[in-house]
Every structure is written in C-alpha cells, then in structure tokens.
Image 1 (cartoon, one colour):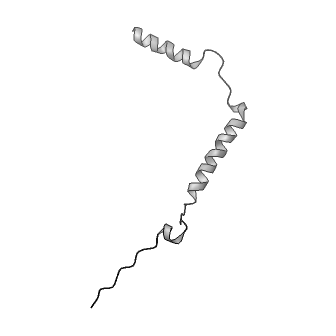
Image 2 (cartoon, rainbow, N blue to C red):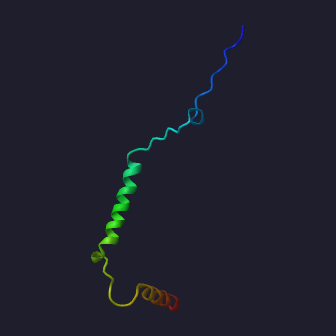
Image 3 (tube, helix red, strand yellow):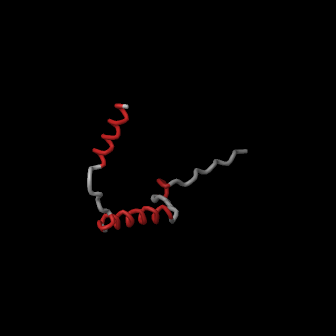
Length: 69
C-alpha cells in the first residue's frame, strides 16, 4: 500500500500574483501627515521668527557660562 503524496501549498510565484493587503491606517496616516506638513509649509504666517539673537548664539553662550563656573 502506498502513502499519499502531500501537495505543496500554492505560493505567489505559482499563482503569478502577490496577495498584499494593507490595513486602512497604513494609507491614511501617511496621507494625513503629508497634508499636515504641507499646510505648515504653505502657511508661513504662523511660523514667525523671534527677533533678537539667534538661538545657536544663545545656546553657545549658556554652554560657555556653564563651563566657566
């Protein structure tokens, strides 16, 4: 008596196409982030620069004060 031969599972290569399913949030979240960043770039009124010393100069001055203590 012969044993039955196990059949191979069908893979994407055998069927000729890939079965990829993304959850809804995998498309919606990047789209929302893109729109939010685009709105920030297009609305420069909200991004006013502070008048006075540049922040880098201020940070370096504070670091110098801490080192000299």
